[in-house]
Length: 294
Image (cartoon, rainbow, N blue to C red; front, side):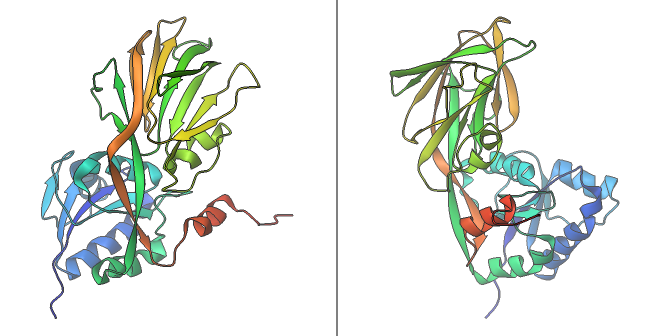
């Protein structure tokens, strides 16, 4: 029985020159299997001009201009977030190859690359659904992509003064945060910026969002978990009369008084996982739980 021809879209980290061996391993495997290989333009230029690699690509693309059976993200979780941004609602599964450090999302190690690619061809994998969060400003979308896989953060800008963030959930007043900022995270983002500010860890597909303040003025203020069908509205006051909104790290300046509406996006991102791999085992490994380093 002939093996079906697959299409792969490749995204990569352009700051990891020492990882070219793993990249060549992926490209060689795909070439041997006669796959159609589409490579994101910035990454292609990094490989060919920066690393002087001979790369055979079916097509070089920019931004959202691609279709594929699978996306391969080569880097860390930041690279996978970039890939997810461009995948958007295309419903294309993403496999993350970890060439960074921690890697909750990009969890295929360099030694597992060939085995994981064979798994894709054999159909021996599972797909993990990850919720996406979106934001509007005064009823209008942002210039950059308004959607995030990890989190949307409202942050102070330019000076040391805190900002005031009046917060409503489903139209009901919750609290006005006096803080350096507020993070609204998905379960995926619960192990990112939110965790570093004391937020809880939430397993994927747990259908919640978490509101985590950044350096709140009051010690009584704590993270709160809400259902992911909630509509969260924020209005910010600032001495500098503006603030930052960071959407998976992509930041924009907003004017004081802008009304932000945050809610679940109408699509999910699908992450490829190996059969037998569980979130809890990944969590134990990445967080080094249970290890005695004495």
